[in-house]
Image 1 (cartoon, rainbow, N blue to C red):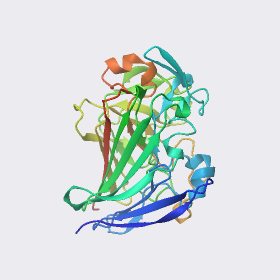
Image 2: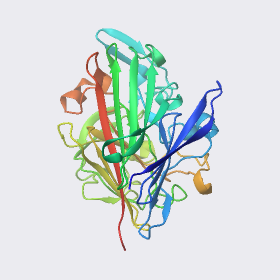
Image 3: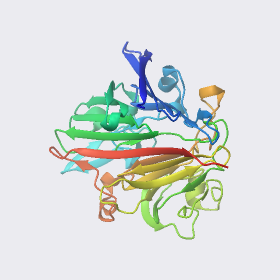
Image 4: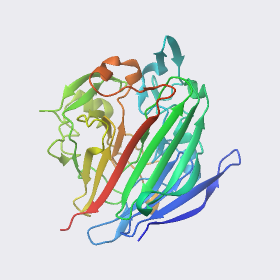
Length: 363
């Protein structure tokens, strides 16, 4: 049985553009809702161990919330041109200095205020291999947009398999050298979609190193996780060490750090496994990327009331953002350590893939 797909209008942008919405349904009860604004995940509903579907993603039914509420800016969005931070909004490329807008003082964050999260993409229903259904989103980013060089054509394709595996594939081409590092900024809560805390969720990460950061969240060193609150190799609850007396945690109000994954030669491999003991829901994140940014929802303020009336407060969700290292465009030592270059040149197609694999563990 093939997943089905529903298309309808979501809303209208201030400039009068209509914005589409797409709903994918898998035979196992998994439902995924996507929107053209930000090429984003709006809602994901997953059956628990008893087969009862429930929300597992922070989001809101109204387009207006994504336009006006700071907490919701990145909810479920495709992030680019460069995910995470670029120090002081500056970088040099082939001898030319570039300046980007500062939207996370003193740094540039997630492609800036005009990043991929804040524009309408063109969404088209698609059918993939084996009858998988999905949505392909396309975007043209002109030369100079938010200070970035080169005109870039970007595609983000979400597909849902009949066994409920959600896949995001992104690719892009540029007519001039430019940095590119895309991710999806999903906020996950497997218990209740954000009504409560995720600190009792169990997380495992196969990373032996993480990037320590300064007080503006810019990497300063690669450190081993052994013997630190950043060791998730054997799995533990998010809350176990989040309040440990570590300057790295205290400065961020929790986890907001990049974990370096073992090299896979560009092949898909498991980057993280998240589980909620109450519902039995489990999520595995697989990726071709070199790292994953763990963010424990430290700055969710309660501003947004989302699906089913859930008010999203601090630690009500966790993000597992598969991406290249923060500020890699300014820190060549990161490239030498195997985290990969973020510079894409004409004729070199940028590609990345991430999968979210859902299941439910019996009691």
